Length: 365
Figure (cartoon, rainbow, N blue to C red):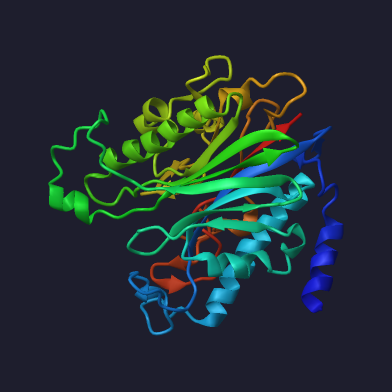
């Protein structure tokens, strides 16, 4: 009962949580508008071992001494950020892609957190072959997004790809494991949408430069298939790409373009390409600011016909993406001042949020 009352109180604090979104400190978006975003939840593990997964550091007797109290704090932190985005926008996310989650169970715990329970988020998740057991998933509001179908898309070393795999032995290929790309298809107000959630291979190790372009290519190829199967479908590709919008995986393999005008039917408009050039960051890697957390849209959503959903400028009237960053989510002092306030620092639990800031776009008709 306490959880229900708290959730109702939070709901009352979020104006317009049914249809419209208010963005960038008071810039009200009229008509039907929805927030679509992505958040890397940074190692959202439960305290139990999943058979076949290397999750031992996130157990009570593991290296991180991952207790129920720490797990509860982590869940509360993630819910706080999601709820604060809703307060800023005047609406819950209609669709929120997430990564670095261990299993469906941790999301079931998250969506009933009092701070966000009123959103009634539903879950799309598949277990992937990643050795640590981290997956991608999608949270959605069933009153807005009408689910039709979904699929996990497995990483492969396709011999038809333009990437040269000669440096990889067959044994290395057979042994490689990473996250699936998640595709979820449905409708919003009668219009067909497909959402891809990615967590491309990390930058650890010397061969990731080949793996990320292949991961981007896998998502791109499936998106183009959907465009042929469902003419006019509106597609959003989001995720922790472990690459910047300026890297070849995004510009060549996902064909991300900086402006709507140059985006053709075979391209994606990447709002964060202009933002990284302007100095924005969603995380720091080896001391440098980056935007790995990318949300891009196909031409059908970037150049939508009048009266249908189209991506909107939401920051300073010119940027079509937003990186959500509040002071409590950022280190305010010390060695890591100005960087995301994460869960662990130098091996110690510090009770922070994530090493990534969430990113999002707004669509409107």
